[in-house]
Image (tube, rainbow, N blue to C red; front, side, top):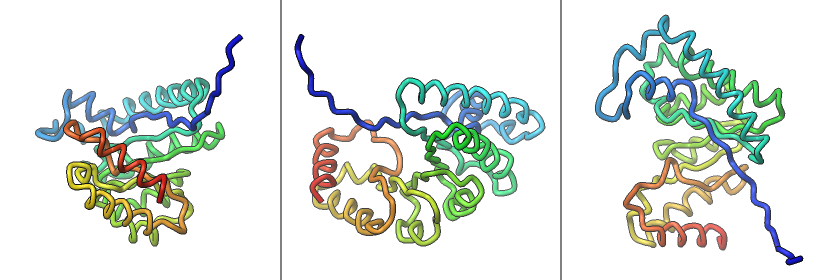
Length: 210
């Protein structure tokens, strides 16, 4: 029989956070251009969020059973939530999912995109194993204010549309900022459609050889 050299890689599963899923369910489209104000009616969506959380727990468990090593919870539209509603729509729903993960011994990474300095409050309340920065968060501020958590990402995806020199400079900024901190090198959001794959390859090679 033929022999194969198999290298196993860690795999990150992912789910959308309850608020972000709610935005798409009610809004019917990306809220970049328009958002239905009915989304903010807590009394209407309390039970729906509860059902979403239940479904996400099952989804997470299935991903782990299928081989994922960690799950990332994407709250891509957390920045749309008014401050008085953050607890109901963002902090508490994310914490319920993270608490489930802890009970099941599943490492979790949260991505509350757009929260700005509320990242600190989120981290202190939700207490995930890891937290993904968006590109608006200063890495030095994150290193000093986000405690007891591994930090991931932060690099602006737009930088991959620039020169190799600018890409290396931007990447070095994050690598150096977190050199004494548990850190997962990554972008602060997804790749842009117009990104040149060769730019991504050069960035990855640079990081691996740093």
